Structure formats: C-alpha cells, structure tokens
Image (cartoon, rainbow, N blue to C red; front, side, top):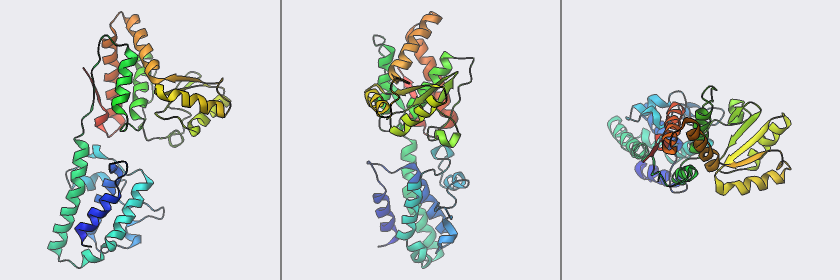
Length: 305
C-alpha cells in the first residue's frame, strides 16, 4: 500500500458516527508534520510515556497555523482516542520508513498532499453553519428553547445546554459572577462540585443523564447542598429513574432545561415590563459571548429570527 492509500485507509477507519473528530484530524496533521522534520521516527521521538503524541498540546496551534488552520479549530488534543488514532497512523505509515526512501523533494510533495487532505476536513468543519432558530411570537419561550436544543442535537455534546443555562443564570442574577467553563472541562478537572452554584443550590447540566452525574448530585446532598439536575425534557424521566436507583429522588430537583429557561424569560420580561422576545435575545447574546470566550466550535453560536 502506498502512502496516499495508507492515509486514505486510516481516515476511513477513524470515521465514527459518520464523521471524523477534530482531535483525530489534528493528530493526523501533527504526525504528518513530524515526518517532514524526520523520517523514520522512533517511539521515543513522538510518543510520551503516557501514550500521547508529542506536539499535540502546547505546539498544536503553531503546527496547524503552518497549514492555514486557525487556533479556533482546536487548541489542544484532549481525547485518548485521538492519541490512539495517531499511533495507528504511525503504524500504517511504517513509522516513516517508506517515506525515508523518497527524495527530499518527493517526500515534501507527498506529505504536503496528505496533510492537505486532513486540512480540508478542518476547513469543512470550520465552515459549518451555526444554529439558526425562528422564534414564532405565538410560541411560549420554552418552545423556543426546545427548538434550539433540537437544532443542536447530535453536535452539541452538552455544550449548548451548559452555556444556555449559564447565560440564563447570568441574566437572572446580574450581580453574581456566574463562572464560564469549556464544555469539556469536567467537574473533577476543575475541582467544582457542579456546573453552577448559587447559595446552597448547585446546578448540574446534562444533555443525557448518567448514573455518574446522579452520584455527583448525591455527593452534593451529603455536603448539605440542594442539587438541581437540568436536562432536556425528553431526558427528565430517565434522570428521575436514576435518582430513584440511588435513593435521592426526594433530595434533588429535576427540571427540563426548556422550562427552566423559558419560565425565567417570562419572569424577567414581566419584571422589566418588556416582551418575551426581547429578553430571549438578551439571553442568546449572553450565550454567544460566553461560548466565544471558552469554546472553539463557533458553529454552536445561536442566531434567532
């Protein structure tokens, strides 16, 4: 198998759920770029003791910039699967032994061509359209939020839900600094007991409730806090079932995100003597600002009509 075929086969093997992840695209570019510097490579040259592809964190932005890919595509590779994919690419390319047999000019041409394949996938990702929702004035605000979550389904990874709740809390409590974390920054990583907390209330935001999430709620109950689990309406029954499974169903509140945000839009509109859509636009403006501050996926920006 020649180099181009090996890269094509590797790309195909990395497609999961109909797409290839940003992390894997970035790892592939890092590996090919390293072959431009040295071929063949040894394991010690490119793989850390922890199994990560070197250059996939602090140096990633500089490497991607060589190929015209902006930093907002990905700041660092964060998934273990991507590093495993990188090791498979190294093996598929025989750790660069075949590349080393090429003349300098031919090697450069081949590696540039293969890197462009991956760069084109990065540009496709960057060109994705953001979330656009028409807010019919006859609908309840909760229906507007439901429409947003429907549009985000399959590409949000819980980020839209988290930043919508953060924006709502900031709008409802303007004198309180509501923290803003990237969607992939888990509670354990940031040493936080939940996504947001106000007084003794701690908010857990999830697109798909899990037993692990409910156990975090139980931990907060033991700390003397009151957990509020926020999930899309269609997932609230599952959340209640999981709460019953570990015996905390009477010690937490489970709310649909659509209702949690929609009801507050109504309350804020009444307080401000304003219309619902004006308040909705203010919440979405806050959402977009929070998203831009910590995320790289700008296709998750929301535009309402």
